Figure 1: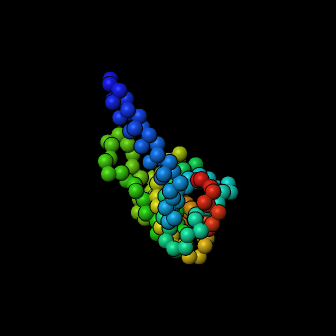
Figure 2: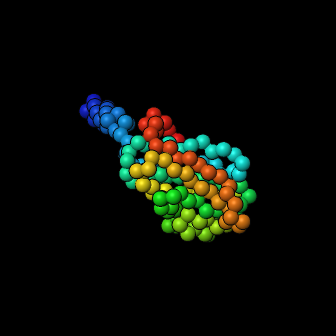
Figure 3: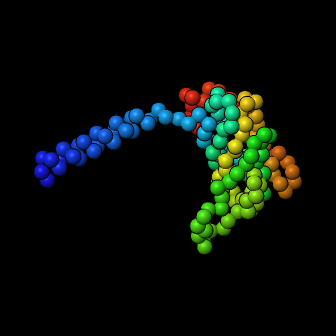
Length: 153
């Protein structure tokens, strides 16, 4: 390889590092992501969203460690959407039924992928996770406004 080839590679790497550093601190004010564990009788840690006032999208991954097969996830003033089922369905996988925030046929240990689109003008709220077979409340997760700029979920 010639000296010019090494110089091009070094320049390419340097530009890549500078680009990464320039965007490392970028955060969209209206988007957060979080993970929770669904388990009855266990206090869930609160989810912190930004102090941004207005519509926020929370990408939520909820892992089912409960024996419930049919689960509903809801929050007052929020729209629940799922990116499930996937566009390409593999023939060897068993798929859940999904309708809004209602998930049917959920296996133990399965992750529920969803978006909560919430109006954050109130400041905080609660996510309720309900067992649809008997209507009992499995868990409440508090959604807190502010303080998230230094936190990672």
